[in-house]
Image (cartoon, rainbow, N blue to C red; front, top):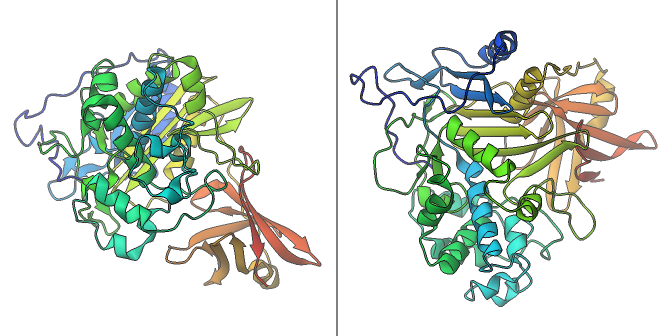
Length: 459
């Protein structure tokens, strides 16, 4: 949630902000690899548009540390490698790690009911555990799905007020039987942290993690101070991103940071310098639902990949600010991309994965669309349901798109008469199951992850 930014104007203000010294050594002999990554990124980030700061490490050494585009369109201020961005839900890692730190100290039991620590929550929530909050399997609805809540985006609601909004809605399902990404889960976790630590959430996180790890450019977004180096955020147009109260993301995405601070955190966490081995394993292991379904989510992190090539992903998205972090444990490759705009032709998830592949010297082969007849395209069209979620496949100007209600349509391209890929997320696929020559269901899947949900065709 965005606070009023103070732009990094060192050139315009006569050295107002000193450049941050690089935190990591450069990797020797990485010129060719850096050139390939840089050339790839330049196809997306233009010099006169909103841009990004990118840091790529391999085994703790810098392969690429570069910025693209502008930090301020109005003032023509270039982005810098040490520019500060809102990292949104990347901050969920800090909240999850704080809960686990308290668990290691005997202050929190992640298997315990939430009501043990927040007795004011309703009796209908008696089955919700701390772990359900950590994994977004509590059944609590995403507040941002409600148009009435969206109209309150400028209001400074307290955690107690956010809880009141959440508990006024019925649970979507029995806890542990479904996955619904909802930031309010992490607001409740932050409330638990404050009560058990007997310390304000932001102060606890800073004392436990930021100061020991020298994350001096990571700042709580609800501190009423200027943030030197903070870039402006833009939405499509481009135009300045709308103001959203930072208090609405309390605990679930509440920090400004840089690529280097995010990298410090990621390496320290993965190298066992933050949590015990058991806590780290819990944080980085996907949670499974009662029916055996894989949520692709751990505690504040998204475990992906294959056993031969696992990787951990974390991302954050609010209007005008987008962040993506990918870490591959076996190769030691870490990619951090922080962006201050919208409208890329590819998701940051897919972009970071491709940058990581270049860092490993194994560029990904892009899918190629095939041409289908109008009849073959029309056969795939229809409505497909997974619980209450309705995915509509339709033709727009001769192109297939996939859309949910009240959301923009995503272009998809056919790989075959029964499989499509998303144009902006080429590794994300829709695979159609035929019955009597007509699609009966569609499976959402990735080329390198466990299968996702199945959507059944509505007659």
